[in-house]
Amino acid sequence: LVDEVPMLYAVLCYNSEDSVFSWSKQEEEAVMGRLIAAQEKMAKAGRLGPVARLMPTTAATTLRKDSEPAVVIDGPFAETKEQLLGFYVVDCENLEEALDFAKELGKANPGGAFEIRPLLQFRPGSLKS
Amino acid sequence: VNDIAWIDAALTSARPRAVSALLRYFRDLDSAEEAFQNACLKALDAWPRNGPPRDPAAWLIMVGRNVGIDAARRQAKSKPLPDDDQLSDLDDAETAVAERLDDSHYRDDILRLLFICCHPELPATQQIALALRVVSGLTVPQIARAFLTSESAMEQRITRAKARIAKADVPFETPGAPERSERLGAVAGMVYLVFNEGYSATGGELPLRAPLCEEAIRLARLLLRLFPSEPEIMGLLALMLLQHARAAARFDADGSIILLDDQDRAKWDQEMIAEGLALIDKAMRHRRPGAYLVQAAIAALHARAARPEDTDWPQIDLLYATLERLTPSPVVTLNRAVAVSKARGPEAALAMIEPLAKDLSGYFYFFGVKGAMLQKLGRAAEARVAFDRAIALANNAAEAAHIRLQLDRLQQENPPAAKKV
Image (cartoon, each protein chain N blue to C red):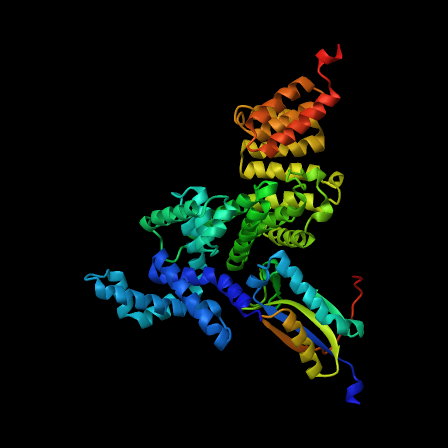
């Protein structure tokens, strides 16, 4: 029974934005090409959800809502050595398969870390990309 | 497989924080750089074996500090009278480490390192060269290539700049708010100089000099991460991103400059534009526009126009009026006049630039703009005089060629009277 329940995982990509945003155009294109190839199997099987790449944290704004009125702060929520730079949503049989998917991505783009986090809810939304 | 590339990237991105912390520790630029170099060598040996440290910069600071102290100790043995500062460092090393490597200082450390490079006694070219060498860690050959000069000349330039700084008083105490904001202003100016050094390249030089633009953008991102609520730093980064976004469209195959109106806008980098616009959006919330932010907003209006005729010239005119108030200068007024000519016609623009004639009598662009306004008003003879003057003042062959093109067009539209008869 468990096998038939689709399990969605988010693969959250953490890396040093210093290095990632210092890539040359050629490096960038090479990495992006390899990443797309690494997703191809899942994409063709109809199991790849939204994929997003985020701007650097310098473009981020944080809304602290634990006070009234809420406070707007320039910059990311947390200052960390490695920053959240993007994410994938993917439909996997189990954690093992999600890890395999992440490992493929990791080979295409070494450095940093992926956090694999099962989704509790998922709504595809109404955005037309 | 990518070990070396990854380590290289980690060393580069850790450099500003590590060198600036080591500078605070050793209080001497050469010692700090040498300690960092030695730490890098150790990293190249240790990291492939042990894996990357959690915090590469902290690792490099600790290792660099230890190597530096060893070197100072060896030197101390051969020197009869080491200076007090070094002695006390050695005696009290453990507590000093804890205090001096305190992470909370790192913003001011990096700002100090950048600020040293823009010492007012250094000419602009030396400031830029020094920042690229010390902060960015570009090699002397790399910098020499970007400046289109020989390696030995660049080596000399950097050595001279360092010698001047060694004599100058470097402030090591933690700056107060006014000093900090003053330093930030000076550093922002220097970063924009780095950018312009690359941006002002002519077509043929571009592949060599464009890295300067990228480096300036990297430095501005670093500054903004250190000072995330400074709208002028957001503005500076946005301005550079929006200008650099046009890089691929700015020159034709022969390396001649293509003016904004004639550029293929499909070649503009949409990701850079999007980031620039996002930063302006953030900065505007602070409601205290500075010169960089206003210039970025002007660049944004160009970036937003899908075609040249979609450009919001009245808004650009207003933004230039703000810029005139913030930083009054004849060059700003001249730029405003270009917007005015589009928004309100060449007559209004000409009236605006005529009072500038005295201040800008040796300025290429003044006569280029004046000629173009006169041409539009059908005052061909006067336009010709202005264009001739512009050619005489051109800074390079590309500028002169561009004006000659205008002259040719003028010639076709208004054949000289003698030929007509």
